[in-house]
Amino acid sequence: MAATALHFHRAAFLSPAHPRDAGAKWPLHHCSPHRIPVARRACFLRAKSLNGRPQIGASFGNTNEVRDGRPAGDGPQKEKGGSTVSITVVGASGDLAKKKIFPALFALFYEDCLPEHFTVFGYARSKMSDEELRNLISTTLTCRIDKRENCGDKMGQFLQRCFYQSGQYNSEEGFAELDRKLKEKEAGKLPNRLFYLSIPPNIFVDVVRSASRTASSSSGWTRFIVEKPFGRDSESSGQLTRSLKKYLAEEQIFRIDHYLGKELVENLSVLRFSNLVFEPLWSRNYIRNVQLIFSEDFGTEGRGGYFDNYGIIRDIMQNHLVQILALFAMETPVSLDAEDIRNEKVKVLRSMRPLKLDDVVVGQYKGHTRAGRSFPGYADDPTVPNGSVTPTFAAAALFIDNARWDGVPFLMKAGKALHTRRAEIRVQFRRVPGNLYRRNIGTDLDKATNELVLRVQPDEAIYLKINNKVPGLGMRLDRSNLNLLYSERYRGEIPDAYERLLLDAIEGERRLFIRSDELDAAWAIFTPVLRELEEKRVAPELYPYGSRGPVGAHYLAANYNVRWGDVNIDDDGSLF
Image (cartoon, rainbow, N blue to C red):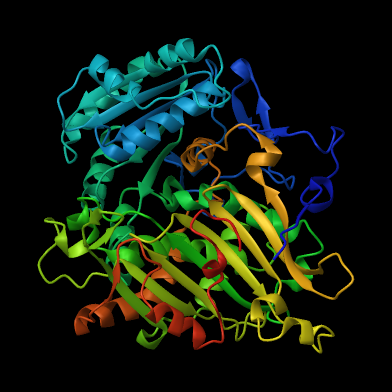
């Protein structure tokens, strides 16, 4: 079947017209346009947000409230010597810090998006000098953005701003010593402090208690970024939230889900709310089903002991995928303010039915030999307990009981050790009523429906599948794609999600972080089925390492007259 590629004109599809030639690649500006370059072109938010309202980090009800660690009645803060930001990475010797957080901070510095005055501290139990920390993180720093000639100089400048403090995570003395060193660096300036908790969740509360008591800013703001998992179910998540709020206000807690910082997830609301062609179609009247697909082509790789405590539903579905679903399905918010957007997301989550066991399929990958190479199964991992029934794959059908989405199945699937690495949203539209070309379409349902695909990773893209006539004297229909391929349209690499989220946390922008009531509503959807799976010890369906997953996932989709959209994609990502 002939393949055609009709390319969207960007000015007509996604944004206002631009004076530059439409065929030229657009450069990526890593500091967004609504941030004002100041000294050293550092990027700060304007005094007003995109909709013209003041950029406020907390509600202004009770004057005795604490906002970002400051008493609400203190009024505006004087900045005689300017302000400074101190970023402390707690768990600095761990993989996440080395592979993601420090490289993201360097990328922001490289693009002049950090404030002029900033300091980075690492905090962990390991004994280490400042120079040893610099040597440790220097191996993971790259000047990937445009590969400029000043890479070495910028890296040296960044590393000179990095320091280290050793201490126990539950030690107020350790954080008091950190506070002393921070004050030395902050001298004469308004101190603002950001703590990134790159540590296991069982020590979140210890760190927050110690740091909030002895290392909070006395006059500026203090914020804590908290990594998932946020508990294992509704009860444990609620307990964690209550424990954190003993020491912090909700406005100080930034619950990070790095998938919300992905470029295509950010573009989801732009695509829907700024393009008239899509908004009228975004409902049960035109959409037949929505699919959220996440797959990894590797297994637990020696991390099975940690993964076994959570499983794929907690690890991927309850946070990454359900957050994307909420953004996809929400009503138009009043504004782009964080609270307005999060209010609409909460409404969606509260409208969703709790998952039932009949609407879930779980699987676990087994060993497989392919092309002479052996791939171990999940149970072969020595860190996994014997007889584990923890799923490494899950598919689920979810429903939103509101006027817009009543009856539309939202199908999720996520798994490890599958045939490819992919994360995407697929929107399958309804068939054309009384289609004049049904004789040409025959029984091929894929040709009867349009499909909008947002590929989050890899190779970010948006494409719309349409039916069209193949040139010639006969009447033969073909399926073509209207494409927006980011790699072809935009020059340079797309910033990592951690860069966007770290910058937002520094600037107090909470739009992409999870509020406590969002978290409660998300856990309410999954907790009943998680308990049932564990109490009944439901045996997962085995699937070979490198396959498309359990056959049961296809039966689940068939129950709702749906075919998974990714079965029409070759292993190399191309359509056939």
